[in-house]
Image (cartoon, rainbow, N blue to C red; front, side, top):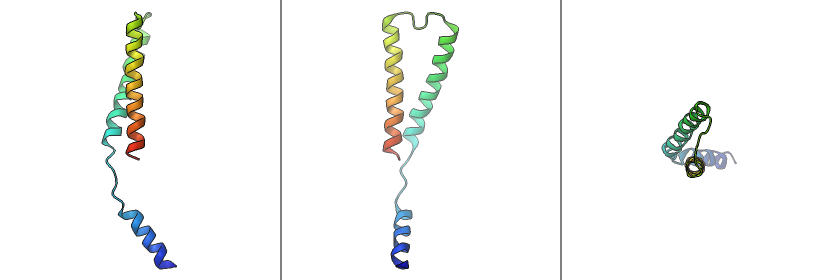
Length: 76
């Protein structure tokens, strides 16, 4: 019984750890984007001014968010 438990622990430790670099990049981009977006939103009363700009902001935010979420799941 003890040998089986030891083998299980050693097998768990032997699993190679995946690189989390992609998550750090996408998570960092999302955090920087949030700060930039909040600064622009607070400094300009009509940000974003046009419908196209609004769609662009939403699209870019969604891209960063999906990227961060996907890399979090993939590198977990």
